[in-house]
Amino acid sequence: MDTLFFRQPRLVVLALLVILSAGVSSLASIGRQEDPTITNIFATVTTVFPGADPARVEALVTAKIETELRAIPEIAEVASTSGTGVSVIAVELEETIDPAMIEQIWAQVRDAVADARRDFPAGVREPAFDSDGAGGYAAIFALTMPDGFSPTRAAREAEALADILRRVAGTSLVDLHGLPAEEVLVTLAPDRIAALGMTADQVSAAIRAADAKVQAGRLRGEETDLVLGITGEITSLDRLRAVVLREDAQGRVTLLGDVASITRGPRAPVAEAAFFQGRPAILVSA
Image (tube, rainbow, N blue to C red):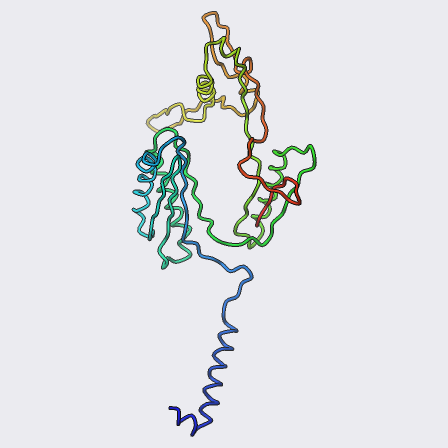
């Protein structure tokens, strides 16, 4: 072969032309994107079980979720870590899966986690499923708040901006960072609660019982099947203040507003904070 190319220089020129043509053709046809599409086959399921030791978390939470997940044939590997009060399960799909089917499989994973949740003991919080995967943000907007501006109002403005960005063509993911969470704080007056002979746990139970968010029953007939609900769920501070804590034989009632101060505001301490040029801000990443 070596002597052939020395004897036939035209073959060398022809081979070079073929190689250059193939290179130019590949360069012209290769796919190019400013933000390459990444097919994500990884996800995590995080479940919080406050106060539980790792053995209880493993037996009562992690094992139940893993059992449901292993029934999905497209899952290649399930790895879990059970710690004090938290379960983290990593899910990896088969590499050969059609990218168009991945979202459907993630929906099956969510359903499997929901099925496992039915057997969780009391106190286990809702599992958090994350399949956003890797990627980069094309733009990050910082919303700063002037002095005296309500953080909860700033959060609503940031969420409105995020909704607008999600509707922009080509946007696949929008995240909010440093978003202040809102909470309703019930501060009990110790002397008044002691006079009633109640504890903070009893007050908490009364509030939960007054917040009707579940069905009260069903009404079935030959041609009907109706769900019965009770109105009066807690949707405002005034409704919360009107929660009945105790009623005596004479019909006198003690309301939550009589023994507690009720306010709405940002949760403290914050779980996540963001700053822009040294000032508190909310970051909207797209």
